[in-house]
Image (cartoon, rainbow, N blue to C red; front, top):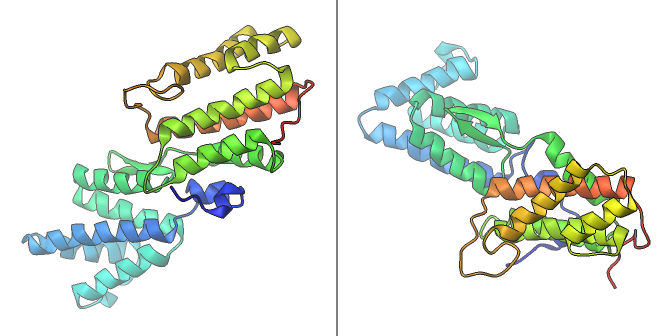
Length: 277
């Protein structure tokens, strides 16, 4: 798998990898290609009285244009949709595909759009024909903030960047190993503080070192490690295929990024700075 220099060095903004307030050109092109297929299928299936209505309604209701200025030919309207989807601001592009999806009211169209949005790590999905956020600005900011606070040679940063790389590979994402790298970042930070590994014993050592750490909070950290250790193939090689999806990998990356920041802010130890040799 090819990992770009900008990704390895942490130079590519997290926000451009997990698309919360943007849509890159590859994603826009995929969305347009499917939108065109849906519109053309309606044209050729004898339902383009419906598709003509789509173009008319989009012109007057979505774009708020005068009805008497509607393009005469459907092909011109379709070209305008293409231009809008490929070049408008990201929110307007989402308005457009949501309008198409709701106009046809077909679950399979929403499902097809969702496949594209998921594959491209977009922060929104169709839920009952309406776009809703699945990744928030706050979650993305948690990852960004943690990476900004870490030195380029820090092993913790290496693990988090690698987790992001594995998540962001659109051709062949590796969610299971992304989870592994996210957990490894927390383990490395705990070892820097306590000198102990793996994560379970390190959390116990941290409680001895810092009695003020609430037992329930410590248990939740160990439970996260337990999930990764128990899930087939995530932490240990097995014959089973790991059942880790994108949403889980994103959740673990966000959670581990926030946990690293918390540990660095509130605890210290003899190995506080973790640098690669």
